[in-house]
Image (cartoon, rainbow, N blue to C red; front, side, top):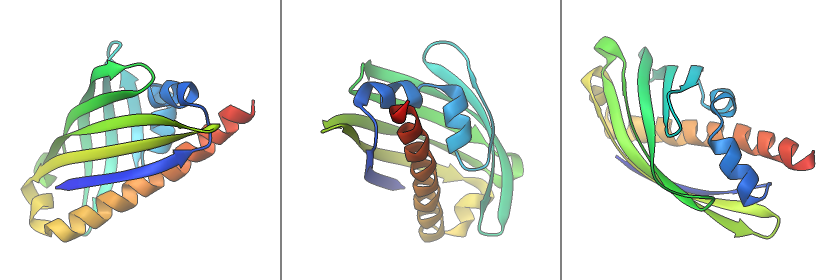
Length: 150
């Protein structure tokens, strides 16, 4: 599954970079996230509860940040396991561009799913993923705006 998008975030690029690398901010923004923990400078572990159609599962996973170019870009590589519900793994490229006093975030995701969630069909998985991404960025923009105002 491929997913891409672009969001204008109401904060400067350095602030956006810092927020994207803060486990507590990520926990607040990721839909269904119960916990995000740093496991080193470039690694995070997370627990997330998601409902995809009729399947509700708790995923435990990890992500690593690679090819970091402060404060411009990085690549996120990760995987999560949801027991009988299945698994998800993939990578995302994230680029931050200055846009006046704001930051334009551009992302591209390539992900694979398996198990029961894969049986739901690619259309449902893609639409749910897009909805989750929109929820993440809505919350992230709120937090970024509050941080920029300080």
